[in-house]
Image (tube, rainbow, N blue to C red; front, side, top):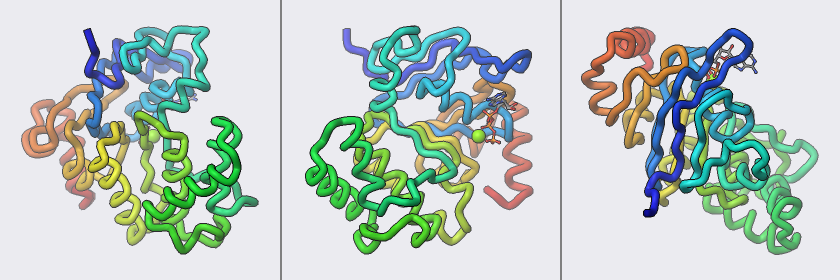
Length: 250
Ligand SMILES: Nc1ncnc2c1ncn2[C@@H]1O[C@H](COP(=O)(O)OP(=O)(O)OP(=O)(O)O)[C@@H](O)[C@H]1O
Ligand SMILES: [Mg+2]
């Protein structure tokens, strides 16, 4: 039987010392689906993404990619991580490399793509993300929004099947947020499977197939954005959204 779920988290538990940060997370992400994670600071969004990408070992439960348990110890974590792209708030570009080389370096070094081909593909990717003017620039010559788009191009250049996005617009000036979110939208339109932790509630409402509200390491509420934002059932979700609304962020 084929498993239509691209990525599944099953009863995932993660603690740092006594601090239980993920407390039995069950989450299925279908192929091409966009799921956003919302919730207060410290609720476990980043940890969930880091565990999904094997950057953090889990204490219990399983992470299943295309039907295969990737959380089993002893599997090739680097090989698996290549199939799951991750973008962070900070761009972490190599400052001494041009934009095109920042994007080409992964395929060259990790996938053994020849230099000229890797650079050609990197250029194509950068054009796709609207960065054709910045291909030979260096990261410190770019705006934050442009740097984040280069970071996205770098991740896409590895051909990921799933993308995990962690607050990717939080470090940006407000006027630069839109250009990065437009890239996320185009990825969705192309069918990319994404798991997206964000404080951009309006965008979450707009782009998500499903929204998960995290509180203290548990998914307390999950559903289509109209339901979670429009008629939240859980009292904690209601309170969280009220605070967001009061702060003018929804
Ligand atoms: N490496 C770590 N060592 C110890 N504790 C950690 C570590 N990483 C995260 N934590 C703790 O795990 C909890 C959840 O953190 P996490 O970063 O996942 O929250 P978050 O929902 O992403 O918050 P934010 O909205 O601020 O990004 C917090 O209590 C945090 O202090
Ligand atoms: Mg976080």
